[in-house]
Amino acid sequence: VQLQASGGGLVQTGDSLRLSCAASGRTVSNYAVGWFRQAPGKEREFVAGVSTNGGSYNADSVKGRFTISRDNAKNTVYLQMNSLKPEDTAVYYCAAKQVYYGGYIPSGMNQYDFWGQGTQVTVSS
Image 1 (cartoon, rainbow, N blue to C red):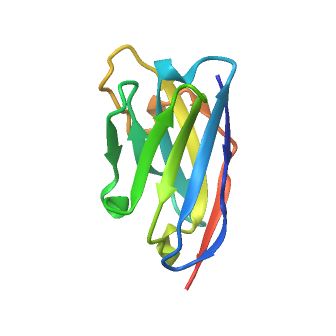
Image 2: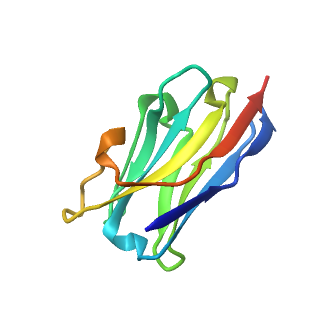
């Protein structure tokens, strides 16, 4: 499966953005999908993930602000980001892993098999 992340941009503190991860090649419905981010000088970190049955899990740093969802008909996963903060500034990547258990959401980088190219999110103070 090929992944294309989009939707990043330059916003101000408190603004919202919606990132999209469009899949091609295979139906994303058979894949758990996660969003990761990497800020300059920092390691890539897990942000949120969605299972094949629609369950989700967020990192503590984004709970209550970010929402991950999937639209299997459009073969796309979204990350709605509200109340953005300067510390959310990073390159955001989506990743996918084919799973056979509906509720499974991997949170480690090494657990994902396919990656998109990343989209830059910059939040100014």
